[in-house]
Length: 77
Image (cartoon, rainbow, N blue to C red; front, side):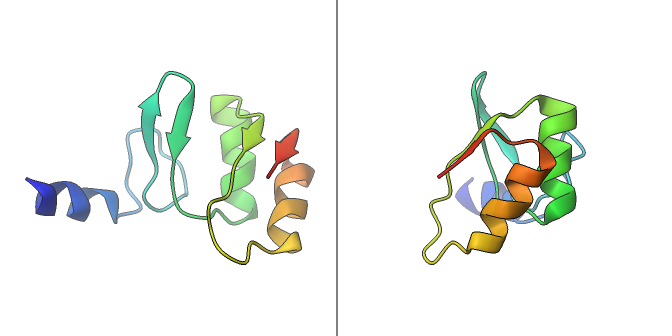
């Protein structure tokens, strides 16, 4: 079972059509996924109304924060 879920989550395809690798819904208020490009941040805001992003990656870059804020994200940590 774990291998199937891992293989499913490592793809670009997801039920929301988001251009973000490993994207999935965790709960009604929480989604998870890989670090998006600018297109991904825009899709999060426009398609799902995402307002806040918490990055758990080491060495998150200022450029990633700027892309998120430019796309309409209100808070990026």
